[in-house]
Length: 351
Ligand SMILES: Cc1ncc(C[n+]2csc(CCOP(=O)(O)OP(=O)(O)O)c2C)c(N)n1
Ligand code: SF4
Ligand SMILES: [Mg+2]
Image (tube, rainbow, N blue to C red; front, top):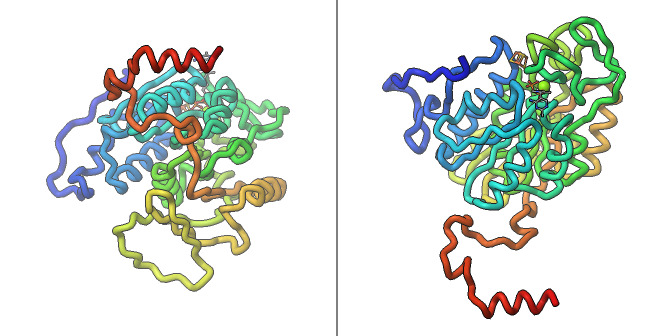
């Protein structure tokens, strides 16, 4: 069975957000993934983030490709727009939708196979074109849906369930996103909800290309000894750079920190990202330093997590192209058919 609706009944005392919605209003169908799959924890984190931000569900467009990870949009935001595309093609479908209607909040969910193998080019171009979106890769290092082949993010030397050793170099999507100009870059772990929820909130409020690589163990095919994407391995090697709090303008700041412990970054829309430093020297606004740090810590065997890079005032595809503010389906005849004189001007410019 591929679709299981949830009962509609709510407990009357469930907490509500500013819109009067409960968390249940941000859920979707019942998950059909394996019990313990990291992807389900990421769906729960997305639900929590959207609920806490009081996002109107109809303002979200959730897009995905093919894979267990790409199935997950069915399990959250049941009242949002959704498009389950072809394997690896989510980024171009999202780009097109975004160009047609910039008023929606675009959330792309993908897998390591979907984005680092068949869709690697699509991933790269959506980032370098600065599409305003939150792009989450649920990274388990395998093709889960097709039963556990190595993916392009499997680390060299890591072992498959039946013992085969991966001899190919891994693609680090965080490194690629940094190089291609993503303006919000994070890595997290499906097993660390406290870290992941604020990272998703910050990404959803970010007005440019936001990328989150979320390590998400596949309990069926990649959670054994010798895997570098298992729960045990990630817990042992996780090195968090910072802990993020997202504060919307109206919320009072309640926690006290010693001077220098916290770095605040104000995004374009007024939301404040409070970064509690866990590594004194780490500066998340320095792209080159972030790239250097990533390589250095990887060589030391660590998996670096947290908000790795942020440009709080980014450009995006629309500002680069100088497009109209209105969604295309709201343009009236006068804008769409400007008349013979306008056509003549365009033709003259091409002669
Ligand atoms: C064009 C095309 N090629 C191959 C496949 C087979 N296929 C389906 S899912 C998948 C890999 C999914 O891996 P990933 O994106 O990592 O998702 P996961 O299941 O691990 O979450 C492949 C190769 C397909 N559906 N379409
Ligand atoms: S096969 Fe792996 S990725 Fe797919 S649902 Fe099961 S645990 Fe999750
Ligand atoms: Mg995968």
